[in-house]
Length: 174
Image 1 (cartoon, helix red, strand yellow):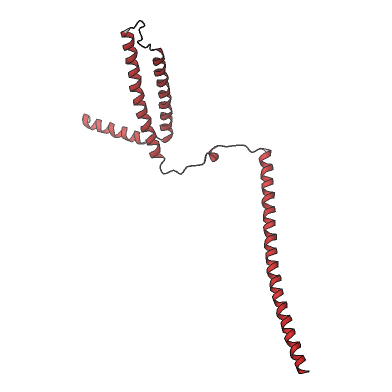
Image 2 (cartoon, rainbow, N blue to C red; image 1 turned 90 degrees about the vertical axis):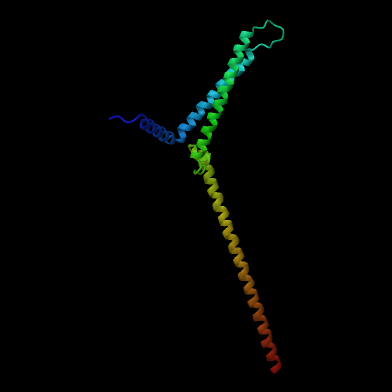
């Protein structure tokens, strides 16, 4: 029993579609990198062709050679156009795959080894932090002390006024 050719074709097409979905972002980036390298190579070849082309300025002119080089140049330009379209597709697919991801700062992605100078800087930063915290605490205590002094001054003024009134009343009685 063989499956009909149409069923085989649709099964293969589904497998290819599934394989296309399973391409991960890293392999897409690798494909993109290879595409960029191809673009650079083709561009260098185009410049090489342009440099080697002679302008028809009265010098012995070989139309066959010129047409051959012109054909190569046009072929390279078409290939370059296709490569740029491919790169755009890879770029769009990578952006689509990474749409839900939050960007990670590059500093966190690069491992580094701490040296003694960074430990010294950390120690100095800790000392500075401790000193600033101590200063803040002293300022808070000073503020509270001033408030208490203000309250005591008010109480002393009230007591002075009370004693004055008591003395005045005693003086009136006598």
